[in-house]
Length: 145
Image (cartoon, rainbow, N blue to C red; front, side, top):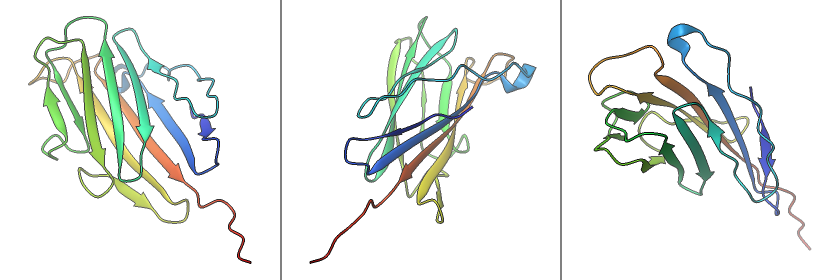
């Protein structure tokens, strides 16, 4: 599922494709109602994930329903963009456009990556979540005079 949003100046379009529990093939999450200038949350039973597309990175904010002691990573597990939960319920992860497995999709001028949320730090379990994040940037119209 995907949903699009544009900021008031039309510069940033955010598309977030949400896949939950690919291990047990559950259906994707519900569609989100975006409004200009706001970023709605993607919500599952265990997590609330929101993100913000910025000029050089994607800021991912995660809120868990219970203290989190698992592992979250963007791209591959050893990409450098990861954290191990220490029992808090709120975390942020900065995903740079030029690192951590983020790919630049040239024709659409967008950046994409995969966010993995594992509820055990060493094991892959049923119920782990995989979210594909995509930030799409446009130049808008420019008039020279």
